[in-house]
Amino acid sequence: MRSGEVRRQRRVDHRREQLVRLVQAEGTAGVADLAARLGCSVVTVRRDLAALARDGSDWKRYHGAVAVRGLIIERGFQDKMGIAEAEKLAIAEVAVRLIPDGAVVGLNGGTTAARVAERLVAESRAVTVVTNAVNVALQLTNSGIPVVVVGGSLRPLNYETTGPMALRTLQAMALDVAVIGADAVDKEFACSAAADAEAEVGWQFSQAAENVIVVADHLKFNRRATYRMLAWEDVDILVTGREAEPAIAGADWREVLAPMDASEAPAVAWRVVHDRERRS
Image (cartoon, rainbow, N blue to C red; front, side, top):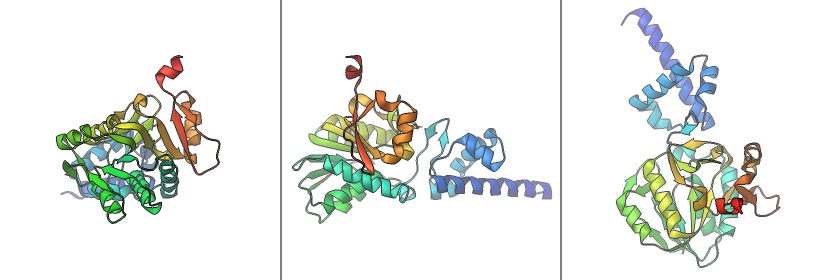
C-alpha cells in the first residue's frame, strides 16, 4: 500500500474510532450531530456506519445505538447497563406500585424490565411472572416468585426468546398486567423496537394482558426504532422519569398522555389517552 493510502486509511480508522466512542458515551446520537463533531459530512458518517456494521469488530463490541434519520438500531443488554440507571430504578418503583398482589405479570427483556424484576423481589411481591428474558428469570430464581419462562429461539444480544414458539406460548397465556420495555417512544409512532422479533413478542405480551404498562427512560422519547411494537391503543399506562417532562411538553404529548398523580417523585405514571377519548 502506498504511503498516501496508508495515511488516508489511518485517518479513516481514527475517525471511526472516534465515532464508536461518541456513540458509546452518549447512548444515541444523530448522524448530523456526529458529522459536525467529527468535522466531516453526513454522507461520510453514513458510510462509516455501514462499514462498521459490515466489519462488525468494534460495532459488535459496543453495540452503540445510532439514530439515523430518527431511527435507532439495536444494541446489546450489557451496553445499556448503567445508562440512566437512577431513572430506571425510579421507574421500576412506580411500575411495581401499579401491579396488584396476586397478579400474573408479563415482563419482556431490557434493562428497565430487569429493574422491575429486581423491585418485585425486593418487595417480596405475591405475583407470578411470565417472561421471555432469561436474565429476568435468573433474577427471580430462589425469590419465592413463581416464574414461567417463555420458550423460543434465544437472542444472545438481549437474552430474550423470540420466534413462533414464543408467540404461541403467549397466545395461550392470560396475564393481568404486562410491563413492556421499548427501544423508542414517539407521539405518532408510539412504542417501537430495533428488532422485528422483539417487536412481535412485545405486541403479543400486550394482547395477552388485561392492562399494559410501558416503561421507558427519557432517552427513548421523540425517537423511532425500526419496528412498531405497540400502538397507543395497546397501552394503558406509560411510566417514565421526570427527566422526560421537557420532551413531553415540547412535543405536545398531552394529546396522548395525562398525568395520573401530582406527586414530585423521580418517576411518574401517565395514563394513555386513547383515540376514542380524544374524539368524544
